Image 1: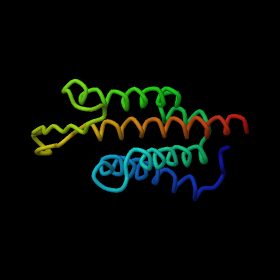
Image 2 (image 1 turned 90 degrees about the horizontal axis):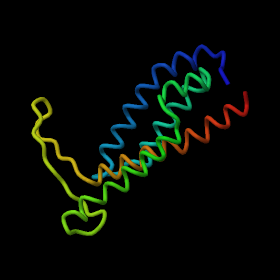
Image 3 (image 1 turned 90 degrees about the vertical axis):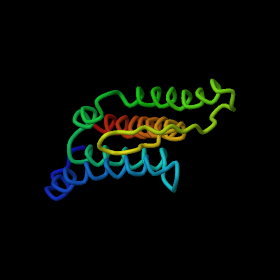
Image 4 (image 1 turned 180 degrees about the vertical axis):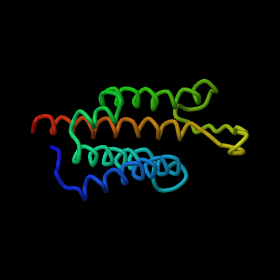
Length: 141
């Protein structure tokens, strides 16, 4: 599936980290504003698919570092686990709970179960889209 376009290859190497960074921005912003795990996962999957267009399937798999189906399983477990803290505190399943942490460089960081759920959705979407894209790319080769 590798292309010979110098423009796509050069642009792709610059766009890949930018798209992944934008994906993380959308993920972290999503539980308070538009964005979240679904759209962030799509942006990350598009970044890897773009990488696939100017390299090959093996390079894209190396970029991911694991089988995309493993990401689906991990994401489902994380999303499910995000509901357990509420149950442990006698609240409903998936109740939003927040905690603040004082980090030396970043200051006060507020983390909660909605972000944990978004992270699970993020991994499921990346895994599902990349499983589809990589399977189609392998069938083409």
